[in-house]
Length: 473
Image 1 (cartoon, rainbow, N blue to C red):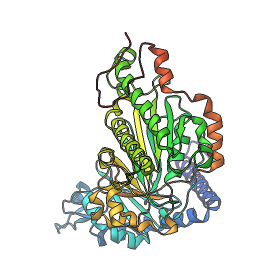
Image 2 (cartoon, rainbow, N blue to C red):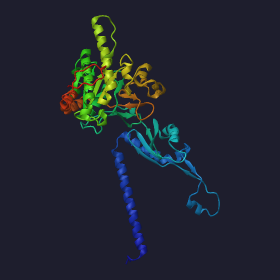
Image 3 (tube, rainbow, N blue to C red):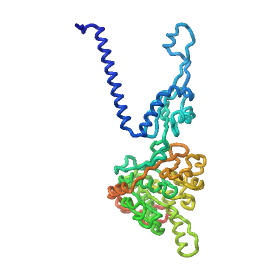
Image 4 (cartoon, rainbow, N blue to C red):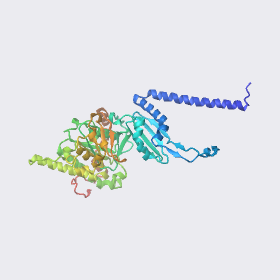
């Protein structure tokens, strides 16, 4: 008969319990891993296998790439165990590596060691790409003492993506989610305090789809109002904004006189806001308090911008009139870009080639953010992104002319040096129609909102050269 007071039997039973728990955990983890693998798509399965190979081979690979450190100081235990007085063999330290995966490749986080930091990992990036069988590898600082290694087996830029807007109000006003970069990482840009954005690129490569996505994501917010001038159509129903025009408080086509009247009214709004900012907001800059339903961020979209600014040559009366209107349009838009930022006016200009004849340089060069889809000439690439793009040939938009790169743009991102390429998602007409119908009731004319709050504000002054604020007596 078993004696339960026997300490030996109790220890044996406890050991069996520990083994049983360990086996249960191991079996559960194995089942979970197998289920996850089976349910994954083909691309993700390949990435899972790749992640396993990376983990298994890391301790051998790291010293080969000089990503290890030699510790010649013996540990306390090694010193106590050294009874024969022989020199203790130095230890080879390998950075700890945690690896995860996604459909495109692997994401690894490595701990730094003395003499093995960000610079050493970045130098080893091409060799890591070869060893891990990746198209490219990027290394960035994750946090102090740790680096983030992103390896992509497949080029994310060559896989078309779609965006299905939810219709939910954006969590952060004025943040533009652009898409995925060449390492399949999400890219966004903060348009707070930004006066203007330029978008360039050949026809059919994604300019309008990019802007449609912006409108769809921002439309559910009553703190944002849209207005559009589309230079490639006569009426909204003819063009790419046929659905979204319901969410715009004003729209004009390629008629220069109508565009001139629209730009003039927006300059009047800008001037009236200058007068009303302190009485209504209590501050001189709207961004000190942020956009609201009663003082919304006004987003002016000028698509095919060259239509409104092109210099018309000729001596006949009609051509002279068009030339005068184009010059006036440029002057009015310049006013909005240079003076509208603090009052909550953002101008987005899209054109094929953002050279000086399409977007005057006194407008283009004030816009701090520029994107460019495919371009045919180096001149067009420089006009869109600046002279520095010559130093970044891999990101130059002249390399994006292949149809596989429809929807891919280059830009100089705010948070990192150089240029990055972005795969922008496609937004279908069905989705934009759904968003427009769902949010049409939020459309309001900012001028009406302003006069409702402060009836003494006049919107009649339209000379942008006159800087004196106007308030009714």
